[in-house]
Length: 338
Image (tube, one colour):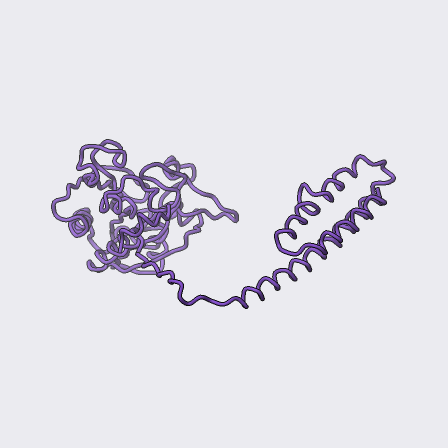
């Protein structure tokens, strides 16, 4: 085998020396150094040799392979430098028509999110942000999710190393904001959230906007007034709206806010799951336990909170029937938004 290896090495060196361009050099790499190359096959065949010959054969093969790899790298650098020099020496034909720069456009989700933020800022809300990778306390514990509580099953979670998770909602920012700020508060928290969910109206990564208000004597009337004003500003005064009783661990009482599906006009489609309505908001009065967790006295202050899905509002605004189209980077779709 050692004699064959010396002959193989000599033949490979000669072929490498004759490689006049990068295509032939690449073919040399495939023939000799690739996963199915000659040297790889010989390395794999060492197991078939007598035990006393395997070590010497393996050392010789590795030595030859290393030498050829070094020679290959030198030859590759030499050919690339020559190709670059040749390219720099070529003349440019200035009479050839140029390539026009395409006009960019804003992403529809950016358009909608900025509009939502503008509406709430007009009502006196300030913007706060928080990390995408959260600890379980801020994402669940501080929001009144006890360990093993069935409500945790509502939000399929991506778990990370180091005890962190990808936040399942923007509500953790509410905890962080209330922990550092004192009432009266009017805060919105826009950002990305993550859940193990995917269908026509759900995506593993999507955008939410959390909002909350805390002060003395805040009631559900204030919550309804703020949300109805938002719906009126965003969709117009003619849109149908309904509040449905619901459950969230961090609010009590709780309500879902539905908008009449503007894609099908309430007749039923895949986006609204044939119901004629599309859920866009979860809301409610902040649970006393949440207020206690951030150091507030629930006897002295109260508040409401809500969370809305940016993609769902964009789907309604632009009559889009599948959430996936926002993330496919199809220029035919994106160019429609300027």
